[in-house]
Length: 309
Image 1 (cartoon, rainbow, N blue to C red):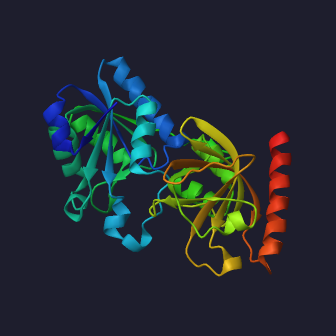
Image 2: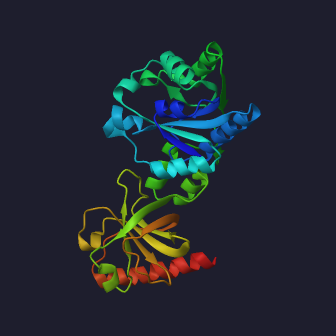
């Protein structure tokens, strides 16, 4: 997989025919992967290359910043996931207000047909494009006929009767329903971050934790304690992850603290990837550090029973 910054850079380096997947692809969830499979299959049928066009920053962060969603994946992880799905090229194009103002047919004519030279386009059933999202998937099908490229519209993927989508996944995560989110994502939701120095309270309680510095643009699961797996390089450990604001110690800033079960390692400065598997309990304030330590002991015992079962 090759990544290109901008449409012009892409076409200056690649001139062959492409089948292009359009969408935001935040999370690269099961619905997205259906689109990606359709894209790579269509490209293979005509000996073309497969490509994805994504925008940065998120369009809503430009148009309505107060409504911009927290992201499920960083750009780096999104590009990696698209490559793992078999996409040949990922084009990351800067999104700005002038680009957002392009009318639907002009977008198809100037961007897809003239600049990218697509031979085919694949989109989800709910895809919209152009100024104010006025263009719909059905419009793209008609315009594709006009500009001589095919368009394939992929039907929704459902889990337990609910259409898979990034918004639904965010709602599950906000509610702490990480298992439901994983069912739609196709993998456990994870966060990666650098281990930084904290205030050392976990160690004083007998449960030394790794404090993670996480990209502020990414969503976090709802506050609480989660059975997790933590990966550091090639090593993977069972862990408890605490998401919240540390109310027992009157801390207001958001935190992600990870306690490795049966391991005590110096992880400062290293990157940790934490996958959230199951919520154990909500976050709450305790009357004293001793009471908190007793609760953590109970959390560890419950985590061990879940691992065994």
